[in-house]
Picture 1: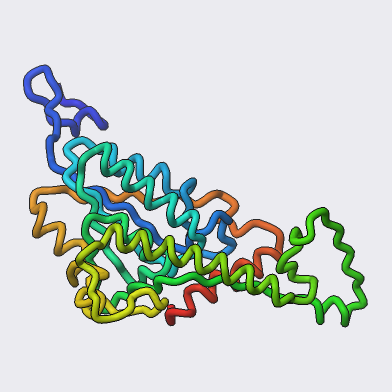
Picture 2 (picture 1 turned 135 degrees about the vertical axis):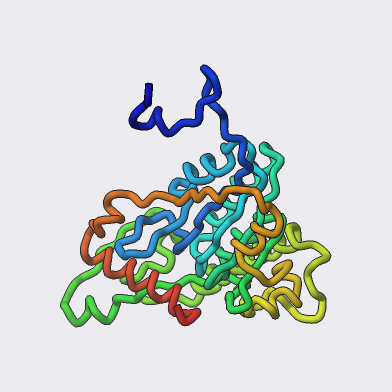
Length: 280
């Protein structure tokens, strides 16, 4: 008797269901700004919360041969960059599978931090790679509130509690404090790159200035292992494997662009600025 529906499409041998034992290469899409905040714009955001389910799905496949990270990010929050990279390495060690990072349009700053979670890094010849540095930005509203006749009232306990308050005049000592934080974070970033890339890194050039290089030059400098693309490399290494994609999910609010209008505008401008630094 013929079987209909899903049951009719499952291969059956005798009275048992035939299991598919095809090898799998799981692809995790890591696209967007790295931040703990939801995005009010179309492009997604990356943080440990948004990528956790995609990572666990990717590393949970049977017959898993490798995990490919498809990276397209101009960077963002250093803590979230570190948390995601550490989670990738934890899962890779638990499952004992190789991780290959593929740089697409851009893997810069925190995006390159994520790429270094791979056992191997592949970049397209036009990819922008690197930007090993630290940047932060904000807005100053003292002139605006003066023109509007608004009186700022701020009360703190602790003399440094209101450092870099955007509604107060900027202080030289606050800027020096921020520079110190940047230097510490920069050192941690450089240590991570050295730990993951080791002797592959070229000694001919200072790679930690925040500069960005295209894929071919990045390969010459040891920031990536080779020039190529995901499908070519996977078909070469794992010709019989099936590609299975896992993509971080956006929250409903992010998909609908919901949120406080003023905050959404500022966040959208910050995200746009992050991509625009690299002409994207």
